[in-house]
Image (cartoon, rainbow, N blue to C red; front, side):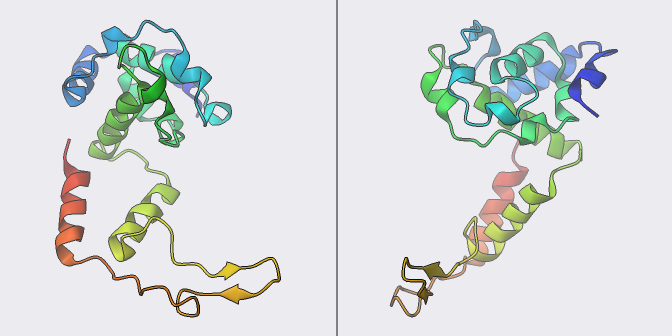
Length: 169
């Protein structure tokens, strides 16, 4: 279901908006004056149903529940360009991360690819698995043949700290 369908009968929920504002702490949505600098630099713009500045505006208006239940918040590639470009320090990145946290808290549908990345980090400490490299001469090398140091799997303390960070609101 698209966000347009969700918004057709939606009413603002100011309690959810206030919860997002608490999660944002020092960063306030009211500083955003919709200059669209975040949108003009967005790496994932072609993938988004809503532009980054529109997401901020909807949260500011109180349409948090609709955003939390949509796939839009998971499309952000977290390139952080919006943070660099925002003249008001009110970038959509922090809003989207707060919306993601709220979605997980509410046990909303989290994309499978996102969960795979989290489990990969817990297992190996890396976002991607260790891969072999192919040269232009079509020779394949792995870490061992390149005499690179062996990658040490994360300790239990890392896994505990990582899980704790995911649980924090």
